[in-house]
Amino acid sequence: MPKRIVIIGAHAAGCDAAAAARLTDREAEIIMLTNERYAGYSRCGLPFVIGGHIKSFQDLIVFPASYFRMNRIDLRLETNVTNIDVKAKTVEVQYKDGRVESLQYDSLIIATGARAAVPPIKGREKQGVHVLRTIDDGERIEQSIKDSSSAVVIGAGLIGLELGVALVERGLKTTVVELLPQVLPAMLDKDMADLVQRELEKRGLRIITGKSVDEIMGGDRVSGVSVAGESIPADMVVIATGVRGNVELAQKAGIELGETKLIKVNMRMETNVKDVYACGDCVESINMITKRPTVCQLGTTAVRQARVAGTNAAGGYATFPGVLGAAVTKLFDMEIGAVGLTEAAAQRSGIEAVSMAFTGKTRAQYYPGALPVRVKLIADKETEKLIGAQIIGG
Figure (cartoon, rainbow, N blue to C red):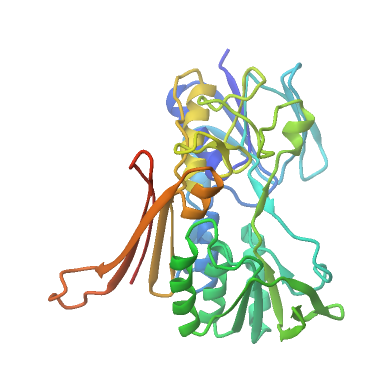
C-alpha cells in the first residue's frame, strides 16, 4: 500500500513539505490539513497588499487549488486537528460541518506555524484593534482603513514597520510605538536602525521608541492609545509585537520542545517521536554562527526546513544545517537587508565583536541615478571571521 503522509498546516512550510514529499514518492497519499479558509499564500506580502503595491490578497496565493489537484495532494480547508496520538499514529480532525474523523498516518509533518502574540494591553479587545497574520486579518484591516484617518501600530519589527508605511501610503496619520530603544531590533544595530527611523520620519511616519502603550482607549470602539502619559488619537490600532509558535498540539502529544519553547528537531527535521517531523515557525533552529538554538520565524527558513522534512517523511534523505537569519524589506523607497548576528546579539552570545560601517553608492558616482548605500560589517575579533552584515540603500 502507498505510504500515507499527513501534514498539519498549509502555508510556506506545509506546502513546500508536500511538494518535496511528492517529488520523493510519486505514489504516496498526501493529506494536508489547515484551519484557514485559504492555503498556500505568502504572509510576507500582506502589508504590501494593504499599501497598494499588490492588487489583492488573492495575488499572494502561491499554491492555487489546481496545484494540489495536479499533484494529488488532498487539501482539507477549515479543518481543525484536535489531537495527535503518536502511539496509534493517528490524528483526530474536526471538519467545518462538525464531522469528526481519525486519520491514520505513516509519517506526520507538523507545520502548525505561529499566531500573533498579543501582549496584555488594557483595551486590546475593543473594536478596531487588529493583528496581521492571515488574509482574513488583512481583509479586516482593509475595512477599518475605509473608516479611519489615523492609526497606531504597536511594534516596530518587520511587520510593524511595513504596515506603518502601508498605512501612511493609504493616507492615514500613523504612529508606530516600540518598547525597545530602536526599530528593527532583531535585524539591525541601533546605529543602522536610527538611519532607518530618520528616513521613515521624513516620509511622515511618526515613530516612538523606548516607550510602551499603557492602554488602548475608547468605548466599545478604539479612539486612541495612551503612551507614557501622552494620548495619541487613533481610529484603528494594529498590534504587531511578534508571533508565538503553535506548539500546544505537539506538546500535548509528548513531542519535545527545545530551550526556545519551540519544537526541537534534528538536522533531518525529526522530532523525538519516530515518524513525526516538524518545520516552519513552530520549530526552533540552530544558529550556524553560535551553534545554539534560536528562533528564526522567517518564510525562507520555513521553506528550506519544509523541503527537508517532506523529503525525509517520504523516505528520502536530506538535512538542514541551520540558519543565518537573512532578512530583507522595503520601506517606501528604502531597501534594507541583514544577515548573521548584530553586534548586540554577538555580545549576548559571548562573542567579542568588532565592526565597521561605510557609505558608498549604488552605482559609480559619476553615473546618473547613483544613490547612497550604507553597509555595516561585523566580525568575531578572535577568529577574524565575518559574523554579520547590514545594508540600507535606496
